[in-house]
Image (cartoon, rainbow, N blue to C red; front, side, top):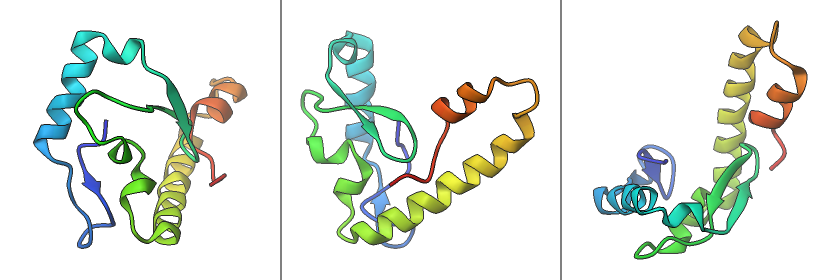
Length: 108
């Protein structure tokens, strides 16, 4: 759940609204998201619902809120690389497929 910035990097975008965050939590509690259709967010292997009642669908995928799509991809790739670097600490003892399928990648 994105409770951080939307629409651009820090200083450009704005904080995710409490109304949207509450709407997403309500959709979880009501079971709506169990029945939803999903897409996979490139680079992070996160399943994102295509729609949530009462919420503009464009807000669900972060790239849709950025006017600078290339800027989004640059920032997202940087974040994915940070996650990948951090996961190096856990590679011993963790099955390779868990890290490869469950974690971020730089395929945007």
